Image 1: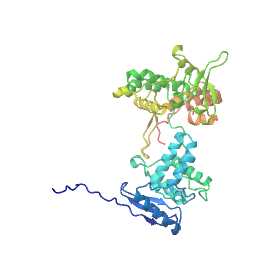
Image 2: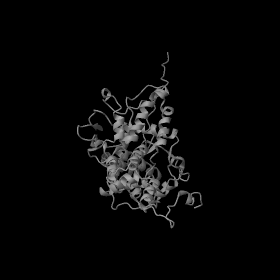
Image 3: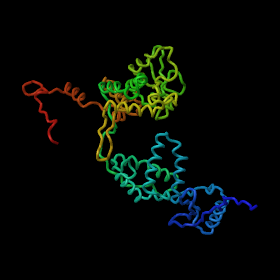
Length: 430
């Protein structure tokens, strides 16, 4: 009886061929085409000496033949010639871990966009002034933007700030011989506040829109959150960390003989310092609506929206960022536009958000005649100028009313000008 032969023959593994490449102005590289990842793998030798590069090539070929890890433990070359990927890792592990998560995420995002536009191989490729000018021009033109629409000069200025911050950090580390330079883009002076305080009527429209966004069962808990932002002057992540009794959170404190305060731990502060601020009367009244026997745990507990979608609740308590996104949906449902769109740059109109409710609280304090320094204390800003620019710009008509009352000037007959006597040029051409 004839022997049966196996139908499956062992196919010898094809070992990629390693080659030495000599990029201009940079250390030699070992390169090979990976059959698994279907791309070219590049590994720096860290040297421009062929006698040192050749043994590294032979070692890599041996590792590939044995199926071993091909990225050896090595110290990155430090300086303008260091691989861009090495610099990104150094910047991430040594610097970005020391800043707030939001700042780190924004920096990573901007550097990713710069990387996709410039396609750098080394740190020096990005630090070059010509490359930075190219990056700035391409950002303005809309490269790597949603819909490939041009970006505004203000947006590009912010993107470039993150890139320059990374390169300046490299300069401080002595990895660049000179601080990076680029001709700054000209930007028009515009209001800093991205949004605006909303009116009482608009706030009521937001409350009315809540059931349509979160459902009837969850509506009351979400309205409670909106009222909290409207009366507290807190940011959304801060509001979601207000509790009755949990250590490390923002807590209201009542003591006999003194006014109530909000205790804010350092971890909840931008300036990383512990602080007490006055508990605003309207916010205090909202807090006291909770029965005494229920004053435990978190104060604001918006119900999950998963049941609306027919899903089970995945998290016991939502994160502040997610709550903020839902509030923005409520602002959109209420059709409250706080900033007009810009067709030229492709920016869509902005609807009322959680931060606009914080602005509204600051504006209410100003309109009530609260002293500027007290408002700054409640908003936790270093100066009134910051509060005024971002949160309580005031109302020109209110200011005009005050000036008219103080500086009322009669006409030649002794009568004060009436509204009906004044010309209406509001519809005249500019």
